[in-house]
Image (cartoon, rainbow, N blue to C red; front, side, top):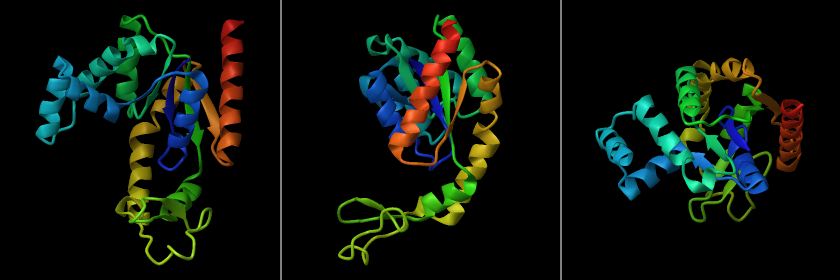
Length: 216
């Protein structure tokens, strides 16, 4: 299974990424991890990316895509992969498609986890972190026990202002990727509200249906 996972911040992508790579026995490839691995390994592309990052600049799309293709060419990706966090824009999606074609690779699915903005904001702004243990709680869904309630804190990126800014960036930059993949018959829309197991079942059922349709 070769897939891309997309969705707004707070939609539960992290949880489902963990579940899906375990279910399909495929590597989870995030651009952040990929950058760190390439830099640590001292690859030519890693050295180029490191120069941009040290200068405080964004790594150019062409370099990111070259690194993605290099990563997808490694042996552990032969049975499939999950790309998470890339592409983030429509131009990136279009360039990635061309690079995949040139590499003789094709996607099986693009999984979009959908959750309404209002619920996203409730999920994110309700998070609280225990500075002593690192445990994450939620004021509504998983309240901190009485013994730690007084010491939990709200992280800076979980405030209402930060949440709104992240959602705006998602809608402006990443949402245009959706019609691109929808037009190619690869998009799988998943209702992201419910327990992690319920959402996982929706995803695996939809992927099975997509595979059956592609095979027929």
